[in-house]
Length: 304
Image 1 (tube, rainbow, N blue to C red):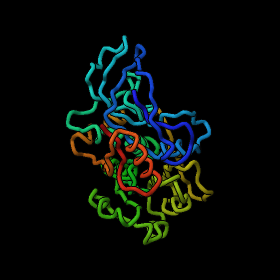
Image 2 (image 1 turned 30 degrees about the vertical axis):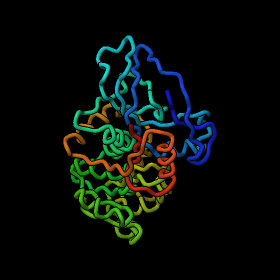
Image 3 (image 1 turned 135 degrees about the vertical axis):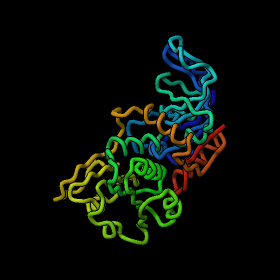
Image 4 (image 1 turned 120 degrees about the vertical axis):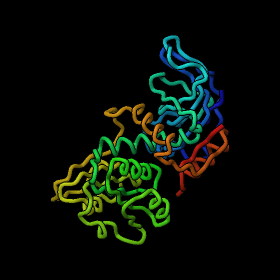
C-alpha cells in the first residue's frame, strides 16, 4: 500500500510517498481502506519536529474515515464494508489498522468528508464543554478562539446546554458566529475583550492557539468563575478561579464523544465547516500542510 510521510523534519516539501506492506489485523483489530483524512495542527507540529519524541520515518495523521476491509478473528460485530471513523495514528495511508472497539459507525447521511472533519476538533470541543468546563444551563460562557474549528463547535455545544454564549474572534468571523445564535460577539482586532467583557463570564473557554493571553481570561471571568483553557496554567490572580487545563482524557471516551457528535451532525443540530477538500495523493498532502502553515478558514480534508 501507499502511505505519505517524511524521513526528516521541516516544511511541507519533506513529504514523500512511502511504499508500505499491506496491513493485517490482529484478533481484535480491523483494517480500514481509507476514504478521508482530516489534517490537524498536531500534524504540523509533528512535521516540524517540535516534539522531540516524534519518530522517523513518520506516517502522520490522527483522524480517519474508512471502509472496513479486513476483520480480526475475534471481531464479530463489525462487518466488512462498514464505514467507520476512528481517532488513531498513522492515517496518511491507503490502509489504517485500528482496534475494532475504537471505531464509530458513520451515519448513512454523512459523507466521509463531513464525518472526518469532526473527529479531533469535535472530540476536543465536546470534552471541553462537558467535562473540563462542565457548563450548566443559564451560565454566561465566553468562548475565546470562537472562529476556529474547535471554537465554533464549542459555541454550538454550549448553546445546546442552555448557556448564554459570547464569542471572541476576529471580525471576519462575525457573520458566521452570529448566525449560530450567540448572544454577543466581540472582535478582538477591533476591541479589547478584557475591557468589554470585564467580570462577565461564569465560564471562560480559551481554545485559541496555545491558550494565548491568560490575563485576558482572568479579566473576563467573574470572581468565582471556571476557566477551561488549552494553556497549561494561568497567571496569578486574587479571583477564586477554578482552572481546568484542556488535555487528552478518557474521562469521556473518544467513542462516546464521536457518537453524540455524529448524531447531532446527522440530524442538523450541529454544523462543521470544511474549507478545503484535497486529493488523496502526495500533492494533496503537501498542499494540505502548506495550508496548515498559514491562516486558513475551515477544516482541511484529504479524500479519495
